[in-house]
Length: 318
Image 1 (cartoon, rainbow, N blue to C red):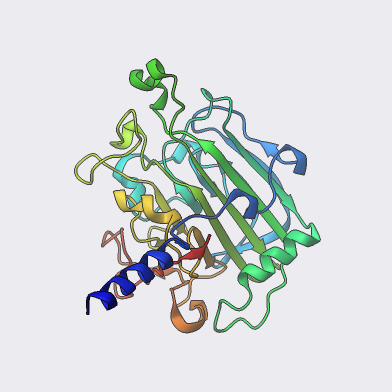
Image 2 (cartoon, rainbow, N blue to C red):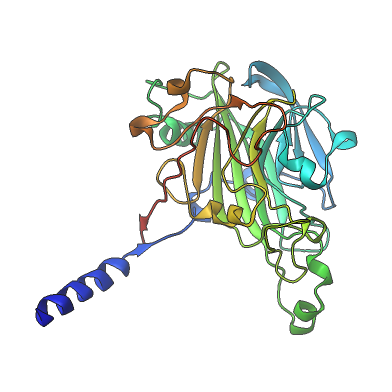
């Protein structure tokens, strides 16, 4: 009996040494950076950039959009909402006044004090990238036999710190870098259907100091005054939205270790329409829910009522 127990223990140790819980490696991101011809968002706080008129209209939550804006704070919009940006716990409620948003990791980000951080963006129809998007999406949706994107918009937040990080005197005295996050959003469309592919590489902070994050870590504790980063899609009509479980709490830190497609740090959603046809948005084997639901006004804003959002924790061979 003793020999059997020792054998089993050794087996478990060997198995675990070959498995890691992790994130999407930067080498596996859609290509980004200066060498790809990306534009770079001006280093500032809460500034945005207009991409201008899109070459192909993007169907998003029952409307076709022809312009796109990228914000420092980890989200994309389809109109200039600088004068309407909401703060505090309003971030965790349905948006209104036409604030139509794709929030990849919506939090207080500031880039003007760091040399190594940047926010890259570009549109592309490069064939190899279209094929990569097609491979990511195909086979994951029960009612989607094929999808061939015609156009991609790629936005990458690279090594971005939180607002307030520069004021940590301890890190300054030790010469230590700011905690930083790296993540990417790719919007793929064929003019009829639209998908969002989110990659999370390194997520180590959840909130800036104004949202309750600690000055030296960007972490915090759930409770009054704390608002963690938000991952969501919103139609801006005060009712139609989808928010990933863990948003606005400390649990959003796990976004790079969890998935809705079985690959840690990778999240894929269909976002062209809000529909009550649940099966249309389910991946094969029902490993997750890919749908936008209309919620009752001011109900639960952390999770969708009446439907359970399943998160598959993935493992990859290192």
